[in-house]
Image (cartoon, rainbow, N blue to C red; front, side):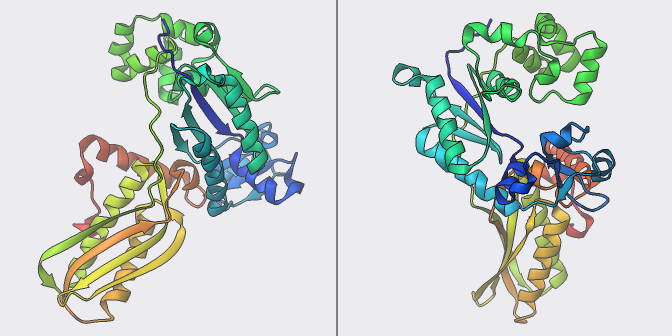
Length: 385
C-alpha cells in the first residue's frame, strides 16, 4: 500500500542536552545525568540512558527524578550552548543538503530524493552522519525511508542498534512497521493510545487493518492520519528550513497619548500575541526590545537580554519594565509603540521547561489550544483589555 518514491532522512541528536554537557565535562560520561529545572517544581528536560534505566524520562517532575535516581548529576542546563551546537549541526546539513527541515533543536528532516542516481542515498546519509559526528563531537542516529513517518520511526529503532542507522526501503515498509507497538507512531498521544488499546489495537499491523471509515468515526480526521501512518503513508513534504531572527509588532495610535496605563495595555496585548506566535512556531526568545516614537517623531528603542522563554508572564514583565524606562525619560506624548523579540532559537517545548513547572507549561498549552481553535483574540489577559 506504500506509494512513495521519495528518500527522506530523519536525523536525531542522541540525548542532545546530555551529550553537549559531556563535551564540556568528560567526567559525566557513563554517569546518570539529568537536566532540567532544579527547583522542587522543575521538570526534566533531558536525561542520559543511564538515568533512564532508573525510570527517569523527559517531562517528569524533577522531584520524582531525584527520588528514582538520587545518585544522578543534576544540571540546570545552558540554552545558549545547546543552541550553538544545534546550529553547528544545521550548518553542516545546509552545506551538503539542498532541502532540509529543522524540526526541533535536536532533529532534522532531509529530502535527498534523486541522490540515488548519482551517489546512493544510504551511502550519502552515512557519510553525512560521520561528518556531523567528526565536526560537532555529538552522537547521532538516522533513519532513511520513503517519508517522514517511516524515517522517524526508523531512527527510533536505530538507536537500539550498534550502528545507529537504519534504511527501510519501500518494499520493506510494511514488514518493518507491522510488528511495532502503536506507541511508535509519531504524534500518537497517551489518550489516543489508551483508546486504541481499549479497542484491542496494540501493534501497527492491527491498526493498519482497521477500516479507515471506522477510524474516522472514532477519531475524526486524526483517525485517518493514524490509519495512513500505520500503512506507511505520509505525503507531508520536507519544508525548507528558514531561521527566523526576530519577531515583533508596532502600533501607531490615531491620536498621540501620555496615558501610561493605556500604553501598558497595548504593550501587554502585543506581547501576549507575540508570545503565542513564538510557541506556535516552537521558538523561544533571548532578548526583548521596546520602541517608542514620540509626537515630535523622536524615536527611542531599549533592549534587554533575558533568560530564554516564550511565556507571556515573563515577557510582559520585561516589556512593561522597559516601557517605564523609556516613557519616564521624556514626558512627551507617544505616537507609536512597538515590541520585538530577538535572539530566537528553536525548541520551545524542550527548553522552556528548564525553569518552569509542569503545571505552568500545561496551562500555556491549554490556553494556546483555545486560541488555535477560536482565534488569537479569544483569550486575553484582563490587564491588556
